Image (cartoon, rainbow, N blue to C red; front, top):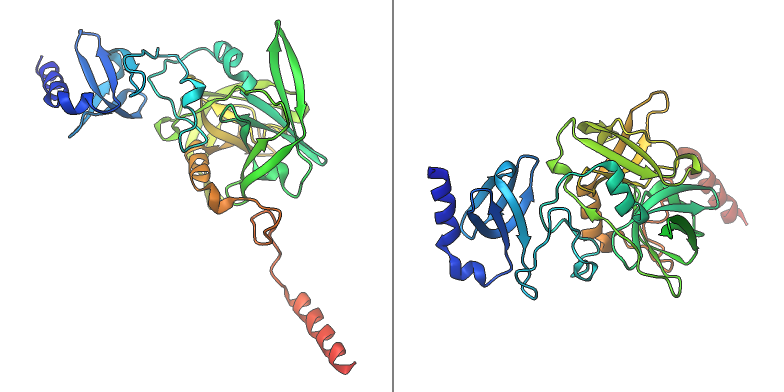
Length: 333
């Protein structure tokens, strides 16, 4: 009872201020409600900023979450609803979940978000990727397109109960980071439609043992789904932290999304141990967000010789010796 009174008092303390800004409403199971801004979602609770303090609300006490926008107040967003595409781009290329979303089965999720996963083809190989907005921006691994300029994207759409394959060849490299193994691409084909896209979740909210699943094209077998759990969140490999998962990852999965059971991307699959099973690795989605938030630092430009597309080998002892020999011979002439 004391906790309930505390929540009600905090929620009612600043009614004028809270109504003046965009806010979310959390309806509790005991008919009370909290109005504030959802700033984080954990496995067992939700963090709500109510103006001068932050409340941690247990998930088992929540009946419904209503996301309120300044231009469209009191429009409910169900626990499994996806934010509308019109709200996707406001200074960012991607969108985080805008409301509490409940876990669903892999079967249900694949049928709703599977069209956002694509196959990335180059003359030397193939990988996977996924759209982050309806305008054709997509994420894949750097190593999938490394050294390539001819890139095509294969998109699969459900038409009359069957999958329709469409290939787009006007693909522009927007940004890339070799050391994070991430690339941002954009489809620029004329008359390209609006694409299905996915939300970027919170890899920090994951716990070891949480169930995840991957969609990709291992060995060219497009739209392959594998399921597993998070084995560890902090596997250190060559100075980088990766999430380790038992979801099967194979060549061709690289660049594809790793989803939680709310249908949110929590990682980008990028490698596996060759001599082992159930030892796959993914780049945490927080690193993906950082890459896109600072994409200007990694921007690719054909006219810029210093862009991150090419990395020259440092001169070695033999190279310096050859250069010295050439200089001496030129001096003799």
